[in-house]
Amino acid sequence: MPIALAGLCAIAFARPAWGLMLLIVVTSTLFHLARRMAVPLPVGYVEPIEAVIVVVIARFALTAGRTSPPNRVDALAFATANRVLISAMLPYAAWQFVCASFGVVAWAGTDHARFALRFIISGLVPLALPLLLLRTDQCGRAVFKVALWIALITALVHTGIQLVDYRPLMQSAYVSASGNSEYAFVASSKLRSIQHAEFVRLLPQGTTLICLLAIYTLVQYIVSRTRRRWQLVGGGILSAALLVTVTRSLLFTLVAGLGLGVALAFGCGFLRRAVMIRGALALALLSGGAVVYDYARPGFLQYWLTRVELLSGSDSRIFSTENEARGRDNVSSVRAIMDHPLLGVGTPRYPAEYSLRHVPATDIHPLLQIGLVGGIPAILLAFRMHLVLIVATIRKMRTDAGARRSLVPLTAVLVTNALVFNVIGAGGTIAGSDLVAFMLFAAEAIRVTFVPARARSLQPDSRPWPSRARLRIREQVSLCG
Image: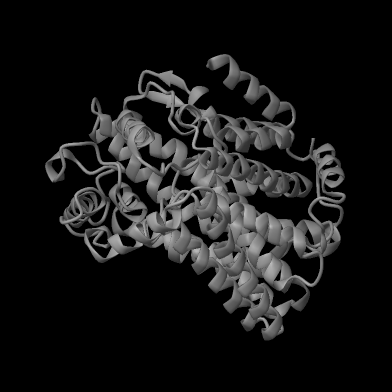
């Protein structure tokens, strides 16, 4: 739908804040709106993520110098924040761009060239998003807040669809209507699940955003002083959306994120008794939601237990050929990386000669996809990118007690994403809408870390969600144009 994509880009150019908010709507909700808007090209296709980000970059480039921070101190803070982001992102982006560009040339005329080009577009272009969000501070705050509301609505709709178990609606909500061949195998697998499975294990487009925001809101509830009930309710809604997918890695990521949040709270010296009580309430809410859902759809908890028991078999052996899907894909990927350790193979999918399956590679570990593109250095640079962001927030928490309650939830998300979500193979945040979700948190964490409090509105932990939130979003959007 070129017209729809052109309209979205026009909005992004005229109003960058609105464009970025609409980008989250089309990429992190249901019904695969982004793929319906994709424009095919001779060597692939263009999706809203890269189109909108490039347009916003062009808008800010054309208006450079027209806006500036209110004073010299704030200007220095924004410059420092930009330097940290560039230091984190640039080495990884430059290395992967060079390796993937070689891949486009080396694999010319094959699907691997298209995969390499797609990685450059969807895996590197979104890395510019935090710089754009910091370009106008009010814009970044507004986009982050709207992302939270979008995730909440998506979580409610997703949970409702699963609860009523209406299969015809599931097909349009979870299965892409795109005609691109690389989605055909995944789409057929989803259709078989909808037609035959008792409990349909399908994920909405915004799963990564929902997962990271669930950790953020629940940890925010654990460490905040006041206005806690909306954070608990919001975190419960987001957690329920993850629970009904019956996806073990997502549930483990959520629980691990809460544990990391509690550990960071202890490290910051917050009252241990209060933190433990609120953490226990968050877990009780999650458990209670599962019991209620089992009452509405009998057999749900038993199905969950069956899925957990499967971990004692081949399901947990994700680097073994005994696991016929993910395990074999990962073994093939490791072999390809070992044969090309320095520069990788230039594409996020292993060459056919390494394949141990007779179907497309759909379950490659996210870190191995990075390694396939740029070899072992790319994996190390990816960890470095996360480490730079995490170290910056931890240093701020050590030196500024007033920022700790705001930074603990954000740091918990950053650490969980680096050490859990991208490591256990839960999907990863290496490209597309998943990377956009991670970049939203990277931008917010760096903003809270470096931008002076006087240049920001109220701290996140002291600001109620429903009351005054819509007014503040409108004010911020109007300021960032």
